[in-house]
Image (cartoon, rainbow, N blue to C red; front, side, top):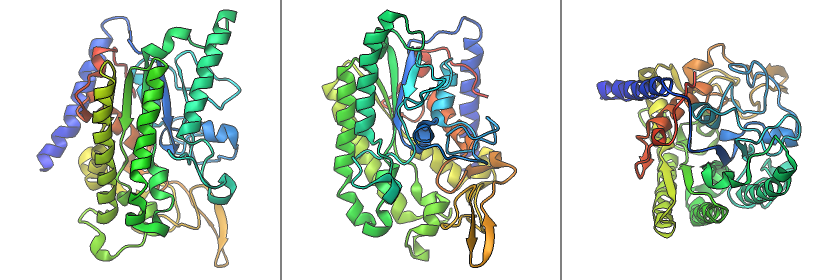
Amino acid sequence: MKLFRMSLWSSLMVVCFLLIATSNLVESKCAFEAIFNFGDSNTDTGGFYAAFPSQGSPYGMTYFKKPVGRPTDGRVIVDFLAQALGYPFLSPYLQSIGSDYKHGANFATSASTVLLPQTSLFVSGVSPFSLEIQLRQMKEFKVKVDELQSKGNTNLPSPDIFGKSLYTFYIGQNDFTGNLARIGISGLKQYFPKVVSQITSTIKEIYGLGGRTFLVLNLAPIGCYPMFLVELPHESSDIDQFGCLISYNNAVVDYNNMLKEALTQIRKQLSDANVVYVDTNAVLLELFQHPTSQGLKYGTKACCGQGGGAYNFNQQLFCGNTKQINGQILTATACEDPYNYVSWDGIHATEAANKFTTYAILNGSYFDPPFSLQKFCDIQPIG
C-alpha cells in the first residue's frame, strides 16, 4: 500500500507537470474566463475580514507574509485554482477597496453555513453570509455588471461572462459541526437533506443565470481535525489506527454520499451542464492518514496552537491569541514549518495541504463524472 500512496502523489505531480509544460508551449488560454466561488472559511480570500476587520498574525505568514483575510498560513484552494487557470487571486465580493472582478468574484466568508443561520454572529460566531445570501450577492453582482459595464467600468467583467465561468462550491462544514457536540450525529443527520437541497437549488438558480460548469467539493474528514478530536465527545474505541474519529468521519461519508446522489439527479435535469462532484474528502483523508508518504510530517497535530502534545490545540485559546488561563499568560503560536503540517490551526488546512488538494483537482482523478480541466484551459504553474 505504501507503494500505491507514493505513486498517487507522484502521478499527481507528473500529470500536473506535463500539463504545465504543455501550456507553456503556446499562449495561455482558458475557456473559463472567470471563477465564481461560494463557500466558507476553507475558500475565504478575505470576505469575512472585509466585513469584520480583526485578523492578525501569524495568519498569512507563508505566502503573503502578513494577514490577508485567509484563515490559513498562505493560499487556499481557490487561490491555487485561479493561478492554475492563469488568473489573479479572486477578490472578495465584500471587499470595497482594491478589488478587481474582471475574472470573477469570491462570495465565500469564514463561518458561513449552507442553511440560513438562526442566531447572530455575535452570539454563536456563525457568519450572516449563508449560501442563500451569497447567491443573492451573485445576482446583485450580475445586475451591476449589466448596468455598469456599458459605462466603461474596467474592474468588472463583460455581461456575457456568466455563461463562460467556472462555479465552485466548498461549503457545509459549519452546518455539520456547528451543533454537533450538542445534538450528536443522529440529531445532525436530520439536517442533511436540507443542506443538500439548498446546494442543488443554488446550482439550478445559477444555471438560470447562465452558469454551465460547476465543481462541488464535498466535506472534509472532520474526524481527523485537531479541534474536533479535542472538543467532540467520544470513546477511545472510536479512534482509528490513524488517530481519527471513526463515527464522525462515517457521518461525513453519509452526507457526502447524499450530496453525490443529489448531484447525479441534477445532471439529469440540467443535461447541457457540467455538474461535477469533487472528492476532496479522499484527498485530505490520505494526507491525514499518511502525511509522511506525501512529503509532510504531521497529520492530526495543529501547526498554530497551544499545548503541544498530539494535537497542539487548546479550545480556550485559538491561533494567534493571547489569554490568561489558570493564572498563566498563554499564547497560541505558529510552528516554524507549516509546510510539514496538514492542519494549520486545528480546523483549517495549511497552504501545503491546500496545494496538494488543488493538484488532485487539476489531475481530475477525484471527479465524478470524469471531467478534464485541461481540455478547457492551459494549466499554469501554482508554485
